[in-house]
Image 1 (spheres, rainbow, N blue to C red):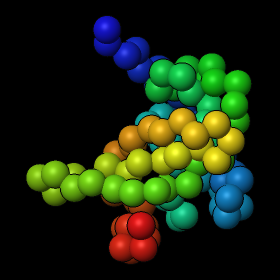
Image 2 (cartoon, rainbow, N blue to C red; image 1 turned 45 degrees about the horizontal axis):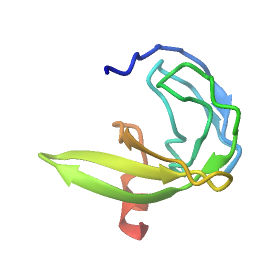
Image 3 (spheres, rainbow, N blue to C red; image 1 turned 120 degrees about the horizontal axis):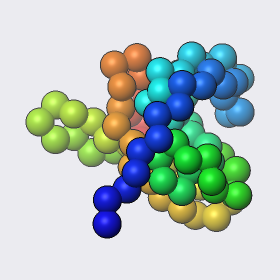
Length: 95
C-alpha cells in the first residue's frame, strides 16, 4: 500500500533548540539541530496523537543522499527522513 503524502508548508519553532524554522512543505525536522517531532502517521497528515520529540539517532548515505533516522522519546516510533540542503551536516558526524 502506498503512503499518501500531504504537502503542508508550515513554519514552526523547534521545541528542542528554539530556532524558528521556515517550512518548505517538505520540512520535517529542524535544520539546525536535526530534531523532529512525532506529529504524522503518514507524511504531512498531522494525525499522530503522540507529539513526542524525536532526536536523530543515526543516518545512512547512499549515492550522496543522506537519510536520518529519528526515534520518538515518548513512544519509541522510528522514522526515516531525507536530509535537505539547508541541514547542518556537521551534526551527522556526532550520530
